[in-house]
View 1 (cartoon, rainbow over the protein chains, first blue to last red):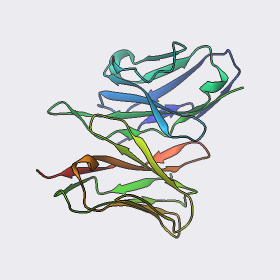
View 2 (cartoon, one colour):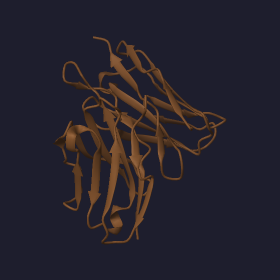
View 3 (cartoon, helix red, strand yellow):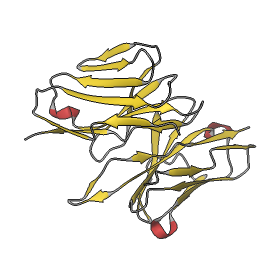
Length: 117
Length: 110
């Protein structure tokens, strides 16, 4: 079974530019999460999709960040315009919905490193 | 490719019993991190181990990093209901990417 994949693995852009990160979850996983790790600190939650719907976007830092999951499969996270403080590693994770309304263990992708110069 | 295997997938314990989860990497790690995810929540950083043979304690939690820096363990003594959740280990794939274990879910038997 293929795991969670993320693309690109590394992106270097200039301040003010736009970047789009992509996450492909494990097939059949309805739940998809985005996280960010800044400057080697702990991972922080950004948002959570259940299928194509945003379940919780309380962790999104500001309106320069836009996440989509059209069709409930892969997801994109767009940063526009990028700022220096957006640099970090963006992780994606996915999990199944199991009977009883519980969410199973999250499986993480390897991350995308974003560097804003 | 590089892998981090974590076992067991689930562990059912009576409250008061001990719990252990193990991580094994296919390659030597520069460090290993541990996270805890409460049911319905998101992974929260617990600790990072860097040195070969390192042992760190946080109250009832003991973290170990193997001498070869390829394996690690988390041991919880006398589990409590607040310990319920999934425990993840993660090791660096590169200088910024992480390879995650699949997690071990700690379940307290009623």
